[in-house]
Image (cartoon, rainbow, N blue to C red; front, side, top):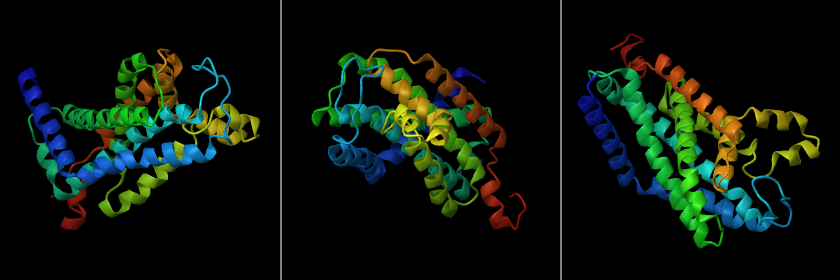
Length: 270
């Protein structure tokens, strides 16, 4: 594979994804409205209910709005990763992915280019949300914006790879919305996005606490949380990186661009 060919393919795939995103203004708005509702409405109603004690990476008591910002950044990455996988299902149904994968490049590279393009959009939306949160008075150290960038990229790729793997399993576009909700909401709520995990353990929810510790989204949120304060959550980063490799490898092995054509050709590949 020549680097010039790979670069052209990456430019073309990323350009197509960006062009689609620009045309879908509602997608950008919804990606920001969702976490903003949690930040402005949910946090305002529960800030006196959920007391956040001094736990790493914080060295003092913090407002509840500050605590949930890393989780809401993870929410942006999670939802956009699922939206990208929805686009993959649509492209496969319409035959676009089959055409793309006929290019004289390794399938793994083409799928990685799709993943990278989706991650680029996820990171852009995450940082726009961070700016809006700052406008609402949520203070995050400026240095943390830079420290968090590689962690946000890695987490976005991991969640995008999960969406890519999910798109392998979902054969019909109309079934994908339910599957997305089945994945998104358990991952989000069974995590430290909205409350520290020690609160689950303290309240006696041992099973939920155990599940949360095995949740990849938990480690993405914690890695982002520590990075925003210039600290390294090595274990969480290792788990996020390992999940990225596992999800992407399984997606590459299982992806069949003709799967979306089976229903229209009577069960025979086109």
